[in-house]
Length: 87
Image (cartoon, rainbow, N blue to C red):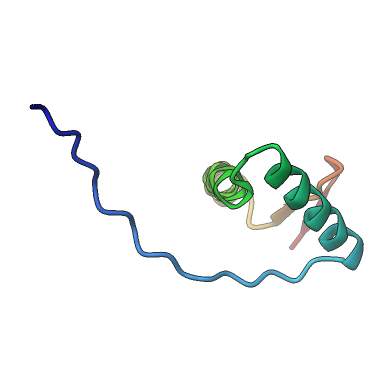
């Protein structure tokens, strides 16, 4: 008999994040909908957060290396795509 062996799960830690009340309400509504659809909301959010974090880390690292080589100013990019340059 062949037995499928599962790896040990990584320990979990809690992350508290303050969000606007309207977003919290939307999250709760989506959590309820996910439960009704048989979807693991937390696992889905954790996977999306891990991808977001990796992408943001890469973007910031790339931005840091570009700004360090191009000029001493720092560039902040906003969610709407605009940017501010500060010395």
